[in-house]
Image 1: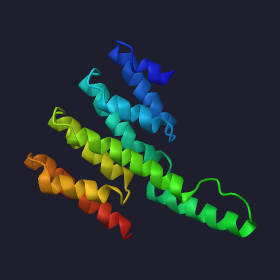
Image 2 (image 1 turned 45 degrees about the vertical axis):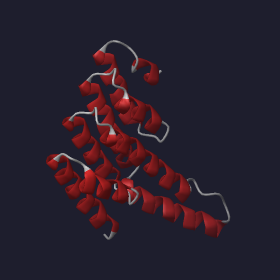
Image 3 (image 1 turned 90 degrees about the vertical axis):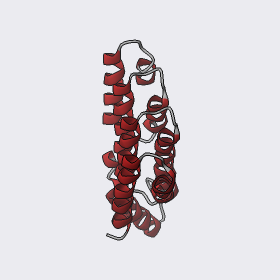
Image 4 (image 1 turned 60 degrees about the vertical axis):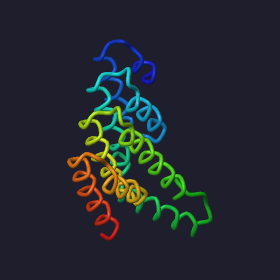
Length: 164
């Protein structure tokens, strides 16, 4: 239903749909938010909110802390001989998909600077090591100075987070 609201002509309904998808915050919304972030028929404010929400999906499930909880769950369930609630592969795949969708926004030359800067910030919110190669590529090759600087700051943050 929320996916259908994104195709409504009313920007208010589109923004409400993005807001509800962000509140839902579960892995299935990643692709819906990714499509909204890349949909050039949507207004810039809707796309910005979709990009922001896409980076926040990791936060709603704990981000790096969520990985530690999932790892503890897997270790405990292994000792008990039962299936874990979540596999580490599913966490990696979800974060990798978020990074991939956000990187597509950054790589699209038709996207304006505000959308690209928000996408880079959202990549940092995911706090996953799969973002490191993407951010390095942006730092080395993007033609816009401000975007390269934003990517360098986020890259520093992501790398530091990996060693905490």
